[in-house]
Image 1 (cartoon, helix red, strand yellow):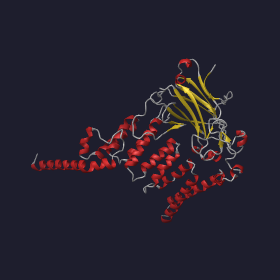
Image 2 (tube, rainbow, N blue to C red; image 1 turned 60 degrees about the vertical axis):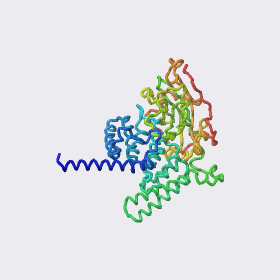
Image 3 (cartoon, one colour; image 1 turned 135 degrees about the vertical axis):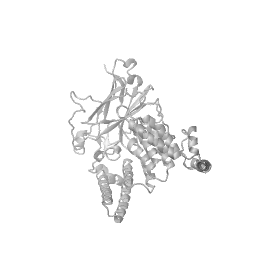
Image 4 (cartoon, rainbow, N blue to C red; image 1 turned 180 degrees about the vertical axis):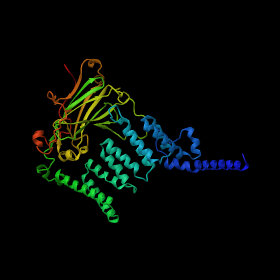
Length: 482
């Protein structure tokens, strides 16, 4: 090695040492104070084998290389292998927003059972990851929006949480105009109709200002879309009786509004355990138009974070890569066709997702008009004012809303077909369940599509207008076939 090369090597070594010293004396303390991930369970410390790389300032470089490696696992469908990489990359570079956003999506959507039902045990940790990402990147809207989207779309409940995060996203100047619209929809799903209309008007003013400055087709289309949203909201507020209810002068009860009189949805259900961990769920829903999906939840009866038809989704304060292995929490949607639903659910193929390690389980059925499509809300209203059920109308489990809620209980022995149920089919049903007539099947090809508003009273029968505030009729559990 020549003299010049030796000098170059020495200078490179000196510069590396100086850079490392500056990183540890100046940069690293500030990073730990102002930017490090706030998780206490996972810690903000790197593994010992990576301290050397951190000393020489290679954190961001290593994070990028690891994320390239993660792409290979995505392509192969090796989702479990991606989780530690996501966590390691966010340790190395807490400003790598794409990793936070992809990690949330991965936890919330990619872990499913054999029938594509999401493993919702991961969602609390997806929310914790989103909150951490927002805290580490407070100057951009992205992680605030992504966390709001998880509440809005995946959880599809607790819409006030989505509003909180969308509001914080809209405080950031870099938010895209198209993404600002979703706040108005979240307001409507939370029953805050006036706030939704006011937000649409604000968006309309902003769109008109942009169009005045830039006479481009894109800006004109954006303005026209928002104007259409304003018009649709005003029409629905009038036709659904919103203005009359605000006046509180008795005109809603006597007016010819689309939500009057309340329509009796006539819910009933029967659950049969056909084989161990294989159940048949069927029942009635007295609504002919297509568009109903009834939420069904099967979970441990003693789950500490369980709430009616859901859970306290944001209970996790730290990011955890492993969900509780002893928890069973299954959520599905029952599609209604021709006033009935019937579905065979096989839980035997996913023992790690559905361990059924407890003695007692709760089976819940839930319908919330706030999550319904617009053509259903035209009759049911935004908050269920146009819906009732003489047995299962509930006005308590969701504040300010009228929902359908039914709760049944099952035992571990029934689900696993053990003990007295070894040679008998467990049947759990509501007392108002009526078996389908011979030859009738909701799985047939013919779909009857009438108008929901036309003839509502005739089809649904006389519907009570008051809310029972509870589960109405009694239920029968543990009934065995003779």
